[in-house]
Image 1 (tube, rainbow, N blue to C red):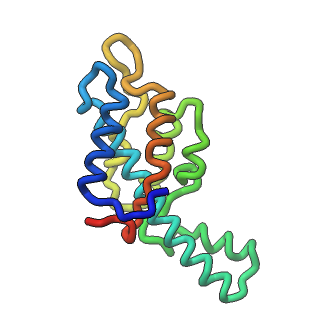
Image 2 (image 1 turned 90 degrees about the vertical axis):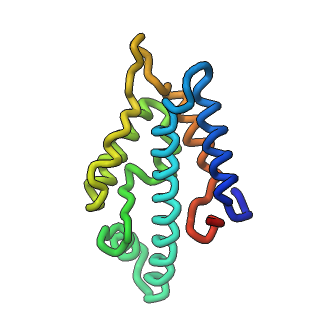
Length: 161
């Protein structure tokens, strides 16, 4: 995990490297939407996990039982932005089959649980096909993309911009 704060320059470099690693002989711009979508998903998860941890500690200090705490932690209205179970990073990164379809479903669930997304998340088609019928981004590339972002910590206190 990255211990130092992430600068805007380092994030930009990371995103460029990630796009380059996916593109092979194709235009990197084709992959920006996928990289940005995964960046957004990771950022949401990191912020959600931090809020969830703070909430957990408060509930535990109040003496609530483990089942009560678990119920309270799943209340959508207590978070600024709620990440449903299907879209939680720890779950997403375990997916290795049909990850494109899984991500489409995960983003749809995020939109369903959070007003204000305005359908923006559902615009990314992880199953988009090229003229020759191949996926623009393969399942293996999506798995690698998730792995690339795994060590990036995107909470406010880890960003230097």
